Length: 192
Image 1 (tube, rainbow, N blue to C red):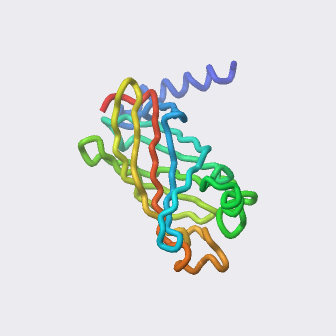
Image 2: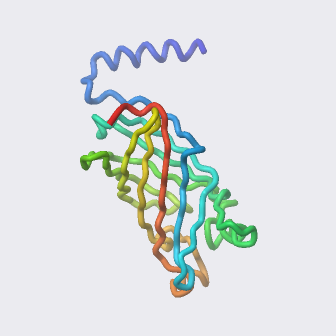
């Protein structure tokens, strides 16, 4: 506790000499009960939905100054479910998520820009199984009752992240295209 007070004083004095546009945005708090993270792929031409039951998001964001914002997402790959215990066990294997060796996937923004009308674009690095790719994530924000909800869909190619190694590289059984849909609810975000 004693160390946190001295650290706060230099930060406060640094903020006083830094232009207001460079000040970091206030941190928001994820509301897990209002959030969902879904992945959809096609297996033999049929759409299959999976969910991640555990994930966390960190957001420092002011809608009036999106360029100063930061967002990061950590996904617990061991929490992936297709709704069937046998299939869920398969997802954890090295050919798919390799969750014992690499239990988390992450997204870290590098830039956020406003597109108008409550729509934003977050550019960043997506890391799955140690494979890092640049992605652009479209985000729509809505606000109601003190909660800000961020929704969007981003398309990825599973083979870019070595998801479905070995015999599963054949995309005739499991398509390469995966849609990741998110709904992230936060408290503590400034008004739009």
